[in-house]
Length: 560
Image 1 (tube, one colour):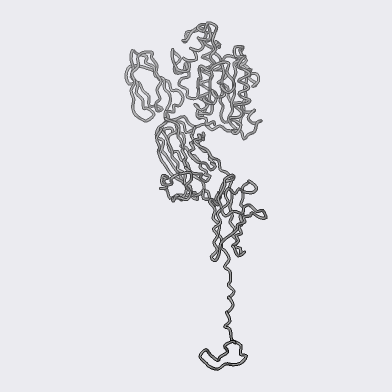
Image 2: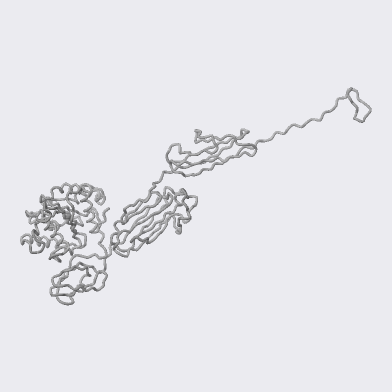
């Protein structure tokens, strides 16, 4: 019988009583904590073709993250936690938004988004050398390593050479880390670095290091940056050496930059200098003069032994004995004045049509119509008709409407007579006569290298030379009238006799003032007349083009 006592110690029982059982309270319902997620990326501004590593940093405080789903737009890209090598979907420049959704073990989710922008791949150039000129503005793309710019037409100018950087406020990479990368610039002359400067932020961001480059090796002494103009200047104190170099260096891909080059004006003394031919008429004679620097010089000469000196105008005198002095053309001891090639510059090419140059005529004509046109056309505003009107070639004087003495049967080899011609067009400011003649020419001096040759031929020479000198003297400025004579070196069968060898000697004497061809009898004292000897026959048009350009540069023309 069940024990229904009132309590365990009571002797009394209650008939039919039911025992009470204590209830267990229900378990309370708990709230789940969702996961969290953030995105990190190895490079937020990669170049097209570069991969990036994208990492989802997800946590769940009351459980675990069990799945990842990455997408770009509506396309699922990956379901792993840390996908790598994402490329821009289109393979082109632009930005892509990457989404990630993470799910925990309770089914809750979290999401994040990260934008990655792919940039156009910059030009990567190592150790390239470029030729630039005074007055050029150089627009440079991004690069790594070193670039060298050779300023080709500084020449023998004396004074300041400067590069000035332009404003970068409109740069397409205005918000790019590339703008933080400094570029070191050095200006070199005489194989020595003359000055160094930097563009770029004065603090080199260590986060920009790549491929093991140590940023501590990069000097950032300059406080300039790419939003402000920077100038570097050197002083070139002598005519030679003539080449100035700009060296740009950066170990990382830098922002593009731009700079303008300025060079000194031609340096001439306040007192003009001239070439003077000095000749003693007594057994000996002393001559005194002031040189280009103003210092007094004395030279002693034996009778009938001429010499040429560069002296300040009106400073030459005979101090003992007797002698003569002949003032020649302007002398440019401190540098040849720079000549500007423009649409008002006229060129006449004279080709000897005597027969011995037949094999070269077509090549020379091709040169003026092709390579030379490519070099000159931009100076004539890319106007082909203008070029063709200002740059012509002739083998027959009648094509220029020349009459009278210039129709002499011997005209085709009288190159001094060709050179004395004046400009054809009234608007032309400068004229350059370029004469291509070969060593077979004999119209001036056949059979002798002194003034005692054939009287008839020498009379032609002296007449034509006088006309040329008068033509040069009538010019108001150096460069308004210039002459280049190219002597093509033909060789007779035996190589030692005949007009070939004699004419070669004649050209040498006229151009150097030797063997009686000094002073007014020759052309060594004329700065605006150049003889280019030993030009080889049978060459292609590129060869003759280079000879032409080199000779024009000797006269001061800046031609690229």
